[in-house]
Image (cartoon, rainbow, N blue to C red; front, top):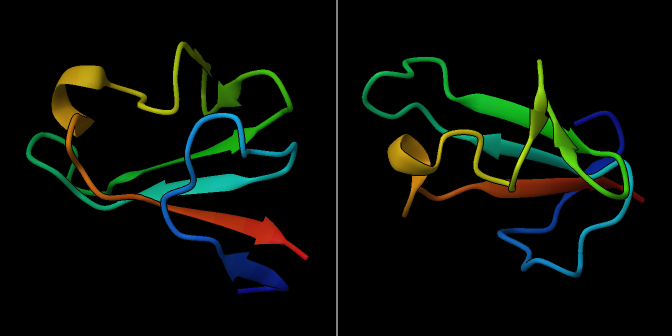
Length: 69
């Protein structure tokens, strides 16, 4: 994936600026979700309060963090 490595579901505190999170589709979100970490916040089309764009819909959902190595 263009030089990005699958780092799996990294825990809070281990993210670095430039990490990209990818969530699979879930009910109500048929295309899934992606966001990038700016070193402080996860950002998609808005600044997210946490890695979960929508805490209700994505809670418990699997995700993968990709990092450019």
